[in-house]
Image 1 (cartoon, rainbow, N blue to C red):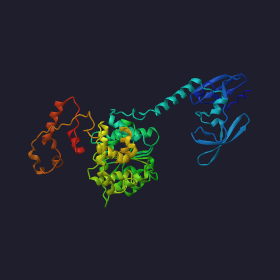
Image 2: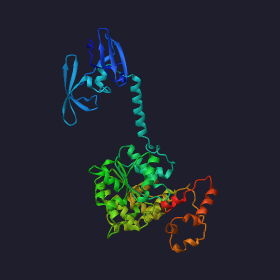
Image 3: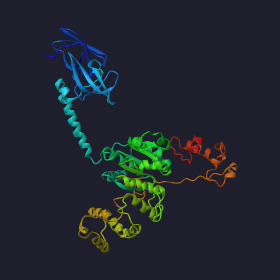
Image 4: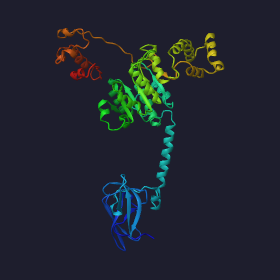
Length: 480
């Protein structure tokens, strides 16, 4: 038998649950008037068969009063036909909340409430949810999962590296493609996939100052990955114990970390899942000494499960610098520089054998003998398996990834078109300077012959897009 309606009671419409919490305003033997303030509606029902469910909260239920205060029900008191709730707020203060003072927007979504209220969803919604989960599971199992969403042109060598590295649980690798082959894209693809597969949440990207905002734009525009840029001002304004804990994905300059011990320590305590360092060749190491930047990144790498180092010139500062970067990735494997040099001397014949296998050539007797010495009985495996064994056991094959323009086909050739321009007399006092316009000051665009030359060139090339690179922002602004 349905409970008798009394003014002041709270009821929920079974037919229209979106109306919100209803308040009985008038009730007699035949009719009941219910106002739903949250939706600005009111309904009149026949008292004998009104499609309404009585709202009864229980202990530990979370509620909100009419003023918007969050409360937890401790005890329910029945005052005749009406209910009152003894509640506690977040500060521990007790209060009495008559049911009339409940928030009109209160939602009762507990399964037992829906069941008792006979609010049963149509089977079509269960089927839709079930099919959605099946589709989601199928997508997760695709080899291309995490690679199709980014706004990039799909280039084979980038996809190969990203898929190879991102398939590892928490990779520690050195991406060393030549300039222009897309190391940033590769790192973004790896990061994007690892975030989607929930292996990575907290990411720190350490960069030279000039690349911070470039990375910010690239990650957001191409991968829809928002980052927070940290500088000294942002660090000082943060109220939390560790400013780096306030964001999940952070971009910061290497100079910020090396310039402040306090910032460096906060970064070390950041509990990162993945560390990305661009322009890693700036980290100098030798047997006798290492730079402050190297020491800081070494400490970060030791505390971070995943590490990506990016550099276009892995041996620019010599073999010692290259060894130092490998040491950041795997200090147990690369612990002795002299042993590393001795190993490298033996790489050449192994690399020659691998190249011949890749090209499908027949191995010479001495090469076959070398394989037998290296692999024993496994020397009789197929070419692909032999190459995999060589990569695993010799050299830096699973740690270092490097593509060159010579090896990657399809990139447009670069051609230099030099234009000799006479230096103006106004630049005579600054003839020895690489950028005389900086010393000349205001009005340099009126005397510099490069300005009219650039204007003419842009007119000739229109409507093609032209990229003009300047050493300083002030120069670009003046040209604009």
